[in-house]
View: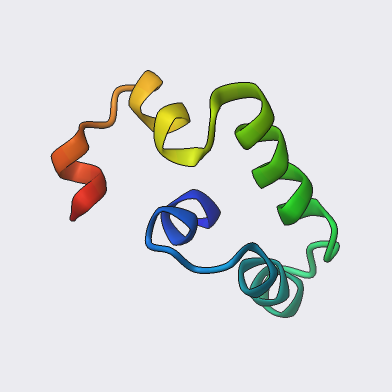
Length: 60
């Protein structure tokens, strides 16, 4: 869900706060994950495209 929220433009801090509230996830886990995807793949969209997503699917 975090990648989808990121593609939709939700700020990383908001995603992290939501995960901390609903999944008991550490507040640092999501920003770290999103930063990793940025550093390693150029962001969430390029990562998802490498994994088989399509541009039209990401736009939806």
